[in-house]
Amino acid sequence: MAFIICLFIKITLFSVFTCSANAQLSPFYYSRTCPNLQFIVTNTMRQAISKEPRMGASILRLLFHDCFVNGCDASVLLDDTTTFTGEKNAFPNINSLRGFEVIDTIKSNVEASCSGIVSCADILALAARSAVFLLGGPSWLVPLGRRDATTASQSAANTNLPPPTANLSTLISMFATQGLNARDMTALSGAHTIGQARCTTFRDHIYNDTNINTTFATTRKATCPGPSSGTGDDNLAPLDVVTANRFDNGYFQGLLTRRGLLHSDQELFNGGSQDGLTRVYSFSYVAFANDFANAMVKMGNISPLTGLNGEIRKNCRVVN
Ligand code: HEM
Ligand SMILES: *[C@@H]1O[C@H](CO)[C@@H](O)[C@H](O)[C@H]1NC(C)=O
Ligand SMILES: *[C@@H]1O[C@H](CO)[C@@H](O)[C@H](O)[C@H]1NC(C)=O
Ligand SMILES: *[C@@H]1O[C@H](CO)[C@@H](O)[C@H](O)[C@H]1NC(C)=O
Image 1 (cartoon, helix red, strand yellow):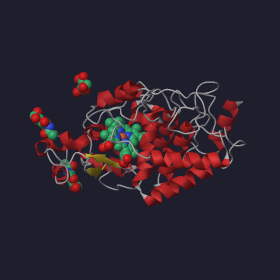
Image 2 (tube, rainbow, N blue to C red):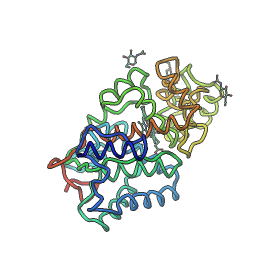
Image 3 (cartoon, helix red, strand yellow):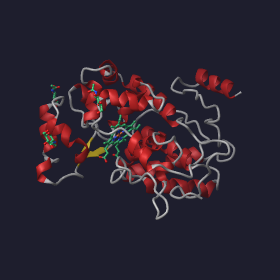
Image 4 (tube, helix red, strand yellow):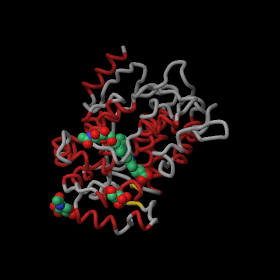
């Protein structure tokens, strides 16, 4: 039955919808129990982004950092306490992840309309989809029905999330571990068409790497002083040098002119297996948008908790 519905949607609506191997998730999971869910999420995201455009990027990144650490189960949202160690202080997350207050606002708006029904994991998946769309990117149907973790893993966050120093083979293998292929990896890296990074994440790249546009490196060094200065670690620069706040294919155009901000970004166009695809995405927004939407559904389907596993958290920051 789920398969037939899936097939029907695929044929009649649009090709960006990928049917999940996990038959338990469905885009219509809350159709009767929380009919205004997607409207509430999009409206709250619209307010947050109009207050601060970067917030769209921050929410999109939260989903990635949730899904790569034992699946899309909202584990990343759990606060540390004296008796609980969560993921927020893991190396890739500390002083870096943001947007938790926005997720709290969405959750309380959703609770006001349908209490105790919608998981924080589903809210995050929907919020990321809205963020991309509101910043000019594609939309897609989000399979729903995830439940929330009662545990988190700081060590898995340290192990599973790729560092900005990663080379192409490391990037491909870390995504493969999550069931995502090289094409998914390159498309998903296009999330860096929005958002900012701190000097500490790209200092080595602009001072020491050779696969970088020298004019661009000079520009970035002006606001990201070298290691001997001992300052500037938190100074920000846009990940997409072409169009920083718009979800388009400017990121890939920047890679073609060797203006990727992170070492890992430029690895997608450095004489390796992803050069061709990067070139295609730089020419064709549509090709990128389709692959990105498909890959977001795939990433969102990583090991969800369903059925009797997990819980529907009351507060996204704490286990019930
Ligand atoms: C391919 C491997 C990836 C690496 C090595 C990587 C690394 C990074 C780093 C180092 C930052 C800057 C963090 C900071 O300065 O605090 C960043 C920002 C960001 N990343 Fe990634 N990332 C990767 C893939 C992804 C994926 C798959 C997504 C989402 C689908 C994503 C979405 C973002 C966004 C939107 C930002 C900006 C966040 C903001 O402005 O708040 N990244 N990433
Ligand atoms: C990529 O990085 C990994 C881990 O640092 C290293 O073992 C590997 O040799 C590197 N591969 C290439 C092709 O440079
Ligand atoms: C660059 O490489 C040199 C020599 O290997 C090293 O001392 C330095 O810390 C590296 N990083 C930066 C940002 O210069
Ligand atoms: C460096 O970037 C500029 C745009 O700022 C571009 O015109 C130039 O072709 C780039 N150089 C290389 C080697 O890609």
